[in-house]
Image (cartoon, rainbow, N blue to C red):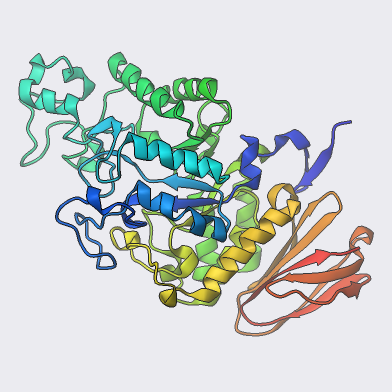
Length: 476
C-alpha cells in the first residue's frame, strides 16, 4: 500500500522525497579550495601570502586538494558528508572561474592523480563530491580564445565567441564577456562545436565518479543547452545531483528537464530578514516561507540547496554584526527546515568577513581562535538531524507564528514528532500550543540541553528565554 505524508497541508506521495534520494541524509560543506588548507607546499604558486593574512583579489595562500584530503577527519568530526568545491580546473586566478584548461586540474591544487586520490578517499569516508561547472565563459587564457586573439577570423575557433575583429581587450573588450570583465569571454552556444566540446568535458569529469555539478550562472547560457546537459549526466549516472546558481525565483529551471535544485538564496534572504536583522515578524516570516515552498514541487523543496552564505556573500556572522545568538538561531533553523543544508567553510567556527574577497579568508585551524559555542552547536545539530528522520524527510507544519519574534513548527514522520521553537527578542515569552490527541503525552527537550520529560495534556506550555532556540521531542 502506498504511504502518504502531509506537507504544508498538502498530501504527497512518499516517493516524492529528494531526488537523488541520497540527498535526504546529506549535509553539504562548501570549500573554497585555495583557502581551506595547504596540504602540499611543493605546488604553491609564487608569490605566496602567509596563511591567515588579509585576502585580496589576486593573492594566493596555497590551499589545495591534498589539504582537503588531510582534513577529512575534521569534516567527519563535524558531521558533514558531502562537499561542494569551488572550481578546481586549471585557471590563473585564486578563484578559478577563469578556466584555462577544462581537462586539467589546476597545478597549484595538485594534478589528476591527486584529484582521484581525494575523490576515492572521500568516498571511502562516506562523503560525496560535487564540482563547480563554469560553462558560461572561459578565461582569456583558454586555448581557443588565445587562438582567436592570434589569428582573428582565420582561427577555426572564431565562432566559439561573439567577437568583433580585430579582437581587442583594451580600453574595452570588443567581444561578449561576463559582466564586462575582459578576462572572462563568453562562449557562444549557437556554435555546435562549443556544445559538443563542453559536453565532452562534462562527460569526462562525470565518469571519474563525482556525485554532482553546481552550475555557475546557468541563466546566462542558452536555456536549451541544459536539457541536453541533464540527459547526458543522468545517463552516465542517474544519481548525479544538479544544482543551478539561480538567485531569484527558479521555477522555470526546476520543471524536471534542467536542474534538480538551485542555491536557495531567497530562503537565505528570509533567514537574514527574520533572524539576523529582525526586519520582519514571525507571522510574515512564516507567510513568506510558505510562499517560497509553494513555488516548487514537494520533491524540489526537499532537494533545495539551503545556505546561510557562500563565496559570493558576506559571512552570516558579519551580517549578524557578530551576535552569536542570532547565528545560533539561524543554524538551528537551517538544520531543521526542509531541504538540504549547506555549511560554508569556517561558518561553523564563527569566521567573519565582508563580501569578496573578505568572505574568502583562509580557514582558521588554531582551535583557540574558534567560537566553540558555534562549533559545538553546528556539530550537535548535524548529529541530531542525522538521528531524527523527521528533520530529513518529515512533514512541515507551522506551530506558532506570532506578531513578534516567537516562531515554531512541527516536523513529523510516522510516530516521530519534533517541535522547534524560537524567540528572537530581548524578553521572555510564554507559549501555549493546543495539542491534538496524537501529540498529548510526554515531551522532552533534546536541544540545546536534554531535559527530563514533561507531561503535556491539552496544551504544550512553556516560557521561552530571550534569544532562545530549542527542539522538543515527543516521547509518547
